[in-house]
Image 1 (tube, helix red, strand yellow):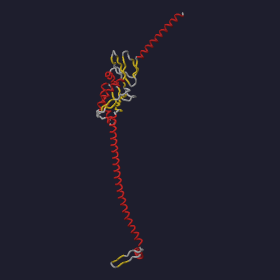
Image 2 (cartoon, one colour):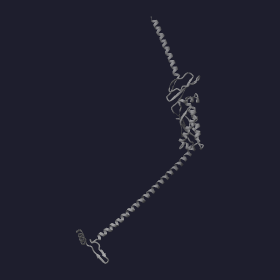
Image 3 (tube, rainbow, N blue to C red):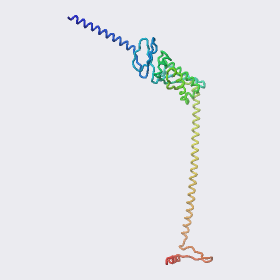
Image 4 (cartoon, rainbow, N blue to C red):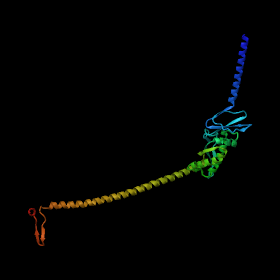
Length: 304
């Protein structure tokens, strides 16, 4: 009785083991053929037998069939940096873009390009570059477009302008040029910008001399403006002082006349003896009016 039971248990165990092995193999195969489309990206699958699939894959884990390849493109803005800085850029070496300016100076410039791929343009990007990952597109093809655009924009400025006062305007033109080159290939350029530069010793000395000349000219202009302001202040001050002197002179003159009158009145009061001045009634006849005569006249005037 125990033998059939043991045989059935063993058979069940064998089936379970076989199932577990198949599940492990299947799971391993599945996970080995699945890949992630990360956030901020979309993907497409290209099959060697069927070509490019029409589906644009949004961020998720996706099964990639045999003899097929998943290509992922960024829909969020990416920065492509082309620089001589060994710690930055697409290539850890001299990767700055050579720019020839209007003064025949050939100067390496660091250039930064911000770009992304619209989901509706994913198939256009793949058809333009085929089986090339976006990292290679960025390090080679976008850089080639930047070099072409920089050669067009650079000849419109001299080295000093491109490194300083006109760099912003030149960057706008660079953005337009790179955008026109790459938009037909499905890559959207958000902005391109001239960054640092690596001028030769001769160009650096020439630029330094020009900067010093401009600085001296600016200082002279500022000094001239200061002198003009000081002259204006002196003129205004002189006019105000003249007006103040005129006003003070007028007031002093009026006060002086009043003072003379008061002094004359004071002298007359001191000399007065208490009697009124004699009155000449007719020629040769003088009448002296005394205080008693005035009192008598007032009393007579008061009677009815």
